Image (cartoon, rainbow, N blue to C red; front, side, top):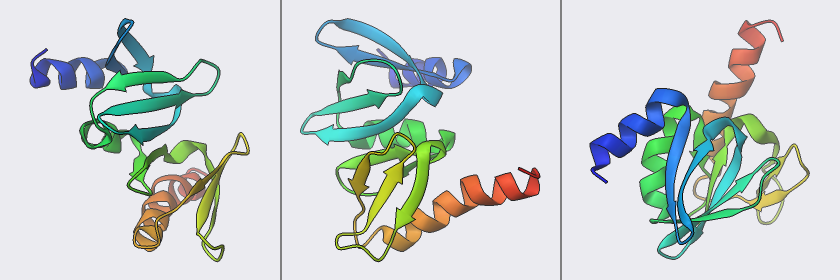
Amino acid sequence: MNSDVFNNLSNARGTIFIKTDKGDTILEICNILYCENYGNYTKFYQEASPTIIGYGCIKKYTEILEPYGFIRIHAKYLVNAWHIRNFIRTATPPAIVLYNGERLDLSRRKKINSYKKWKGLVIDKNITAGL
């Protein structure tokens, strides 16, 4: 599939088109908790659905999902900022905790930038919205 068509399909509906070994799948972006690098594949962890393994490296999906509030916290993880409960910046290694209780390691080099992105996306928007 042409990458322009791929991106337009993904952006038009808040969904993302994933090619898998079992066929093509469309995921709702808001239901994706995080993505995990799996070599030349990417694992998509969802709220209430099974994990999907898609063709393509995480870098490809980072470019598509960052405009939807996803943050690259580690070479291994791309996380939906809206599912992050808190940052544990003083832990060794630093980590984030999702609302479902999962804990993911945070790269020491990406720690400050990831926190600033999360704060700018989620915390500041909720404060200005009166939440």
